[in-house]
Every structure is written in structure tokens, then in C-alpha cells.
Image (tube, rainbow, N blue to C red; front, side, top):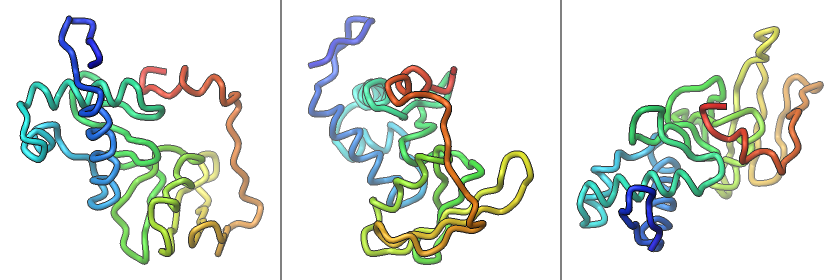
Length: 164
């Protein structure tokens, strides 16, 4: 059991199941489930599910609920709301990536399938396309595309929240 600051506790196995279920739902549908959907699926109360979603978001790197709500906003490497990182899998477009580097991890959640990422350069609006099949890079356009983050990895947990 994991105790919340308000004295309520959440079963750690439920938190892990919640984390995994949200990620799988994002893979399957392109958006995150509401905690009421998870409550019905798990056969638990909506309050237990709400607490489990918030605890899973709190301990997951790159996972959070939308500010002021209990609804999943982002669950690395996906974003539940539209971003400039549009993702297609075998030609079907319904996913959005969390950020320009994290979005590249989506390919590992679709083994054997072609994953296409399309975005635009935030300074020039030039179209950037990256296509993968597993670890094989099929296309990078333009060829000069690079990824960069000006923050060491050990600080990512400090910046991986929507408030920062």
C-alpha cells in the first residue's frame, strides 16, 4: 500500500495495473481512458481508481494529469491531447507524441509496424518526417534533422511536469 498525503492509501499492485492499462489504452485507442472507465474495468470504486491514476502519474516519469483535473493529460511517450507530434502506425493516424525526443520511443510499442512521426520545426514551420520499423530508420526528412534537449537526463524528473 502507498499512503497518500490525505491519509488514504492505494494498493501498489493497483497502481501498477493502472499505469500499464493506461499505456495499453493509449496504444490501442490513441487517447487515455478516464478513471471511471478504469474503475469499471477493474471492478473497483471510482474513488479508488481516481487515486490510482493520480499515484501512477506521480511516480511515472513523463506522466501527468491535466492541470486541475484527474484526467490523464500525458503518459510517456504519448500525449492524450493533440500536440505538434503527429504519429501514424501502418498509415493510421490517431496518436500524438509527448515531445520531440520522447515521440521516437513510440515505435517500440508497435513491433513489426511502420511508425511515422510528422511535426514542424518550431522556428521555421518546415515539415519534419521520421519513419521507423522497429529500430530501422526508413526515412528522416530533411536529412539535417537533429534532436536536442538542453538539460541533463538526471534533471528530467524535475522538468517532466506540466508546471515547469
